[in-house]
Image (cartoon, rainbow, N blue to C red; front, side):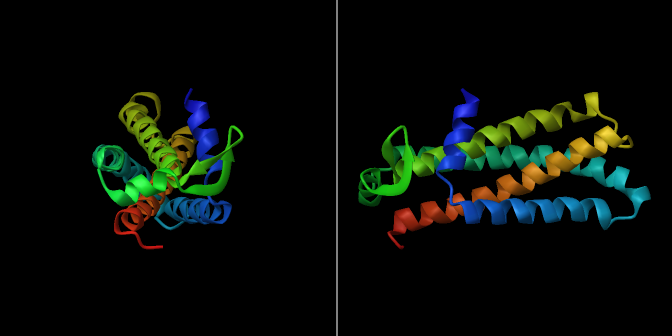
Length: 166
């Protein structure tokens, strides 16, 4: 079931925007590994894991609020995007702007929830001084950056829908 959300997200997302998002996330992730002093990296990983749990909790709440706003708002602009097709096709039908926004928000909520669970469990399964702990930290930092950038993009998209700007 979750896999379907991922497939729909990647099939309805602009490839250039997605690649830019992933490239920025990768640069930040590699920067986290190469810029700090290797001796202080372990302390930074532990601080990051502790802080990211709070950040992810806030992000999940914010994204759920945006999702709720989109599905409950009685706005003529939202009614219009429900019938406005995009160039993306899923299941042999054109995807509306409304459905595309829903797919993106559900994808973000799903990734944020998985990351939140991962960050809560990280200290129980990984030691930040080991290679495996650092690898999983890198994945965590990459996904967190990716999801923050995707959330910014969705917030801007929702703004343009609500204010009816192109």
